[in-house]
Image (cartoon, rainbow over all chains, first blue to last red; front, side, top):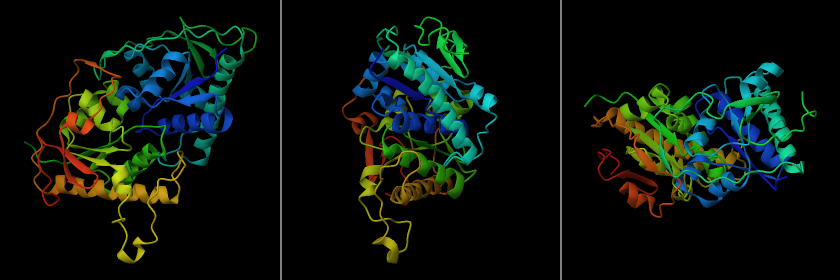
Length: 183
Length: 195
């Protein structure tokens, strides 16, 4: 059980998918789990802003990857931080049949529905971490020496395992769902 | 030196503060409405991941950074990558000035406050975004049309210290002021007609 969970929407801006990730994070942080979640801001993290460092070192992080490029996961790998879980938007889009639309600036209605579905998946994982007495998060330490923009990041660096629809867990991180609770 | 055909626009990439939403909204306005095809938005996370097209964008084209708040994280990322922007627009000082994107008769009633909404900016937040976008567009037009002598840059992929708080970003980046809220590194070309 943890007191708070860090939500990390991939931080992209180019694709409509990244807007879906960001809006999903706001839905979790403002509407569904206020005061129990924090949003990681990557530029501030790289800038050394203390609250963003504490967020990922002392609390479990749920990264929301919007695309196969997995930029959110890549950033955590570069910084030596293992996420507690990953929500993968393409899976949720495929399962729900909802589309991203074409508007990056302000999402279209269906893309907002997709953002809500992504938020629901993040809340499912976060609630398990917040409420399960068995869940123990191992605190981490950020790696402060890194080579940025090299493009030499292994595919699936955390060896994600699917634990529920659109939700993955790194192989070496603790389970957060009771085995019988998800399909 | 080649003729500049495109200007990269890099909004700080933040997600926590409303000001980062303003920066992002302004970047979409410039690249989609004001100068489509002549400007392109920089995606910080794709850049950090080393996506070749994103790396090429910032190496081959001059970049205008939009820093949302006093942390100046956008400028800091360029510092970490060993890149120099052509110019930097810092939102807070511009938010205190009268808007330039409306006629004189509308200036009194046009509020530029960032507001409280992160998902989609409020009306005054959109006004502020439009003002920032207008400033970025003006800089981009100078770069595109005034024989700006851009020398292609090479991004640094060397090991670097990340997550380390730098007290004085303007000093670290060697910014010199052009006007209120607009700076450029001292070693980068001047912006003709703006300084």
